[in-house]
Image (tube, rainbow, N blue to C red):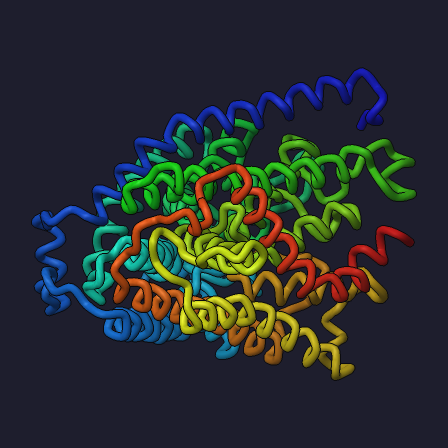
Length: 562
C-alpha cells in the first residue's frame, strides 16, 4: 500500500474522485424523474388491479381518507403482526423447507432479529450463512426489507400531506400507501437492481453448502443462495441486513468496483429523490431543493472527513504501513470503503463493505456522528425526509424567535402543540441511545461485551446503541452483542427509535392537516433561501452536538487525541 505522497496514491485519488463523480451524476440524472414518479404514485386516484385484490384481501376501503390516530393504529398494528410472524418464522425454521439443516434460532436472538428487520434496522447478531436457510432469508427477511421501507415511505408522505393539506384533518390511507410503495416503487426498482447485480457477478441460486479445496490445500465451505434479490432491496430500501456475515464485503454480495458503486447508488437513490417528491406534492420545488441542498452538503462534508481520515493514515501503525487498510477489502481500497461507509451511516442502511471497527479514530467517529445526526443526510427511505422536515420546522421556530418573525412553515403555524411534538421527536432517539449505554455500563457482565478497553471500548458500545436507536444496523465488529441482555436491550432501542418518532410524526401531520394555510406576509421567514438552508444545516449539527458531544469526547475524540 503506497503512502499518501507516493505516485500510486495519486492514482488511488483519481479513481476515488472518478467514482464519486460518477455516483453524483447518476443521482442527479434520476432525481427529478424518480421524485416526480413517487409523487404521482402516492397521489394518484387510480388503483391497479393487483392493488384492488390486495385491498379486498386486507378488507380495507381504499378510498377512505383517515385521520392521524387511525393511520397510526394501522402502522402499529401492521408492524406488531410483522414482528410476531417473523419471530415465529425464525423459531420454526427447522420444520420449514430449504432450511439447509439449520434449526430454530435462540429465543432472544429471534426476538432481536424480528424487531430489527421490522424496524428497518437489520442489526444482525448472527452469521447468515451459518444460521438461516433460504426460505427464511427470502420469505422472512427479504419480505420485511420491502415492507419496513414501505412503512417509512408511507409515513413521510403522510407528513407531506399534512403540510400540504387545507384543513381537512386527514392524512391519507396507510394501507393504500403501503401497497403502492411496495408494488409500484420498491418492487420494480428492486427487480431492475437485482438483474444489474447479477450481471456484475452477485450470486443468485439455491445452492447449499459446497466444499472446496483452497490453493493452500485446505478445505472451505461456501454457501450460495438467492443473494442478488435480497441484496437489491437491502440497499434500495436502506435496510442493510446481509445474506452473509461479511455483508457487502463478501465477494458473493459485492464482487467488484462496479457492483460497489451500484450498491452505493441504490442506497442513496430514493432518499436523495424524496426531496423532489416533497416539492412536487406541496407545489413548490424550491422547498424540496432546499432540503436536498442541506442533505447533500452534510453528506459531502462527512464523506470528506472520513476519506481524509482514512487516506492520511492517522495513527502509529497506519503511518508505518502507509495507509489505513486494516479491515478493508483490497479490491475496494480506502476511497471506495469510505464512500460506502459514509453513505451507509448517513442513510440508516447498515450495510458495510469494510470493518468500521478498524477505521481510524476520527474516521470511526465521523461514522458514529452520522448516525447521531439522526441519519437525515439523506437518511433512510421516508425516515430521512420526515426527520429533515421535523428539523426544518425547528429551524423555522428558532429563526422566528431570533428575528421576531411569525413561525410558519409552508403556511402552517408552528404553535405550542407542534413544537412540543418536535421537541419530543428530537429527544426520543437520544433517550433510547444514552439510557441504553448507561444501563450497559452499569454492570461488569454487560461491560464484558466490549472487547476493547478505554475510549475505543466506549466507542464500540456507543456505536451499537446509536446504530440500534437510529435504525441503522451496522456495528463496530469488536463488540460481542449476541447475549440475552444485548439481544433484548438493543431490540428495545430499535423499537423506541423507530416507533416513537414515527408516531410523533403522524401526530404532527394531523396537527398541520387541521390548519388552513395562511398567506405569506412580510413577517414570514422564507424557507427556500440559501440563508435558511445554512441555518437548517447548523441546527442539524448543533442539536446533535449539544446532545452527544460529552459521549463523543470520551470515546472517539479521546482516542484520536491520544
